[in-house]
Image (tube, rainbow over the protein chains, first blue to last red):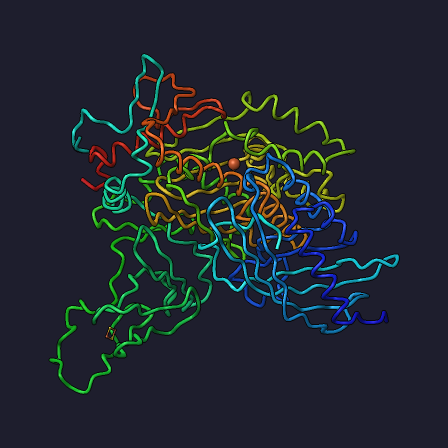
Length: 164
Length: 442
Ligand code: FES
Ligand SMILES: [Fe+2]
């Protein structure tokens, strides 16, 4: 059993992830993920979003590594019209808790608020994230990331074209 | 410049110039929006929901359809019904949940209770009412005037004299059949939904939903992603071959009554039943088995059509059923001339295996929905069209591509990257809003 991360180690890592996203260094963000990683955002009306299975119920996002990289690469292009001109984002990460070991790493639960401004419209995405962080060749990596929005729809936000 | 004035048409077809254009006020004017609410949404059949959403007795969902709040329910005898979500006493909503299961609805304000069949069961009052207050049933929950279904797709109509749903759907029935016939048992709405919004007129999303012309320009980054996925497989050359030959196969087909379908060929892979190496070797056998079943059931030609053709179907005025890399049922609710709410579901055969179901959902989110690699780029286009329509003085939008008819485009066909389908839609829209098309029984 691998040793659990401390809360400070987890926080440093999550802050680093948030920084890469806010600076739109998305290919570097994709490099934080392991080869067997998933990045998921459940649909707002999903029952039991912590345990829901994207093979059985419709998520907003359920990416394995090829689509994590694809998402990052796409958002770097001018032809990703939904994010052109690019949004400004600010990821706030709080209430970080180490909740145990899982899948060879440490399971972390945190709260988030992400502010997105596209042209002159600002919207907020808020909720919680479950990460599983693992050490690979001395580096911390993300094996799982599942974001759960505190929303009932995207009627106020329109769409979700940034990375949470 | 009164709308009634036949000299002042918002939709102009000029066969001599091969020109078809729509006045941009149709996308932005509050006055026209009010007319649409009365004349389009008040008279056309509107999608309410799918029977598979109500599996058990007492299952219900609440939904806004054409500006009216509806309870869609399977009552305790198993019948499907549709009621306006308002208490007949003094108006409170009797149901505040999006979905659930209920024996009855108890109004939170003064406690009137209505059964799942809409009957007023009790007023919860200690005197004060005459004995036969509801003898004629006028205090029961108000039923939507018409509720009919075609192959478990339930539609409502606010006009009691409307023509039947069967007649209204016209050629769209065949297009719905092509979706339903994929299933050995039945097609069902899958768990989960996408609900999102777009700052654009509902007709801009309609136009986009079966527009073959925008594919390469708007979705270039999606095709880049597919190229990466296909790299090193025999499918690698398919993307560019397909783009080059896009307008030589398939067609946009008017289905009558303003409905139309775009049949086209894009190698995205399809759960029914087009396997690609990027889906993984483990899925090859089950997908090929599914195609073999289709051939056994319908013969080669129909099976090929069902399996290979991407079908983007619009049922006038606001339902989209796209059977593309996955199937989506997409309902558009206009809230304002420049704002819509969209609810989209995934659909698949009830009998589907776990691995094919997983692939279907994966294909769905790869492109569709508010966080996919495709739909959000469409949405951005609609929003910049709307914004520019409202803030520039240019009056007309040009929808002339493929305009080679002289009389009525509503049952014609044209190349997939033409704009015949939109010409068919707007011709119906124009005729309904002018009262030429009454959509009523004789
Ligand atoms: S408004 Fe429903 S009981 Fe009075
Ligand atoms: Fe599109």
